[in-house]
Length: 239
Image (tube, rainbow, N blue to C red; front, side, top):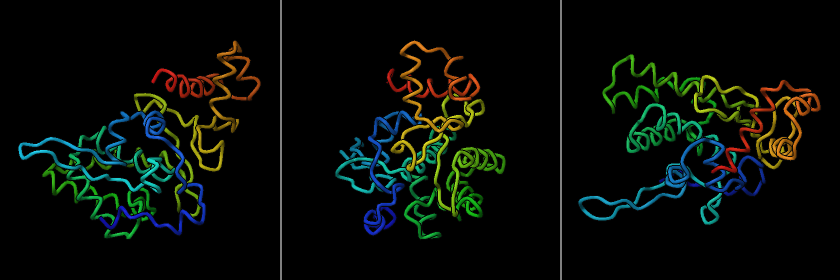
């Protein structure tokens, strides 16, 4: 499909946001999405039907499919895609058709994080899905709210996504923006926003016996922000 063709010139330019950097389990951890789900979105999978085995084509184009590593942009795309699947339970075939619609409208390899989508395309996209699903106007408003909630976790520079504030808690409404992922910081690994130090370093110091209070004083951060950094890393160990 045309929208899944990666532009090799961008890879050659070494934009860190386009470089393969996140294995599927790691991306799944950061996004709080099952690894099998992320794998289906970026690699595809076989599935059984009454007519035999069929192939589910991936929804997100990887910079190098053979390596099966997501770029930062892929991570941001999966973050928004998660809003449709996890929070609104939109069928995958409907999402695929709507993504094709977006790609044709904006001519973008990453339509869900394209600036035009954020500024004037959400309502059109929701309407497109609404027609497929035959939902009420109220349902469309709920869907738009969910997408916008996820888009608010993306920070742009020059109209391009540069930073993702992942949800660090199951309840999105209670998840603060204490941690960010930015391809230019700590090799794209999570960073404590206020102190701009890798969350892995904070967690290692905590495991070594330093208290939340000591770490908060050292990094000039409130204790709850230190806890978010530790929570981010400890969930990875438990995965």
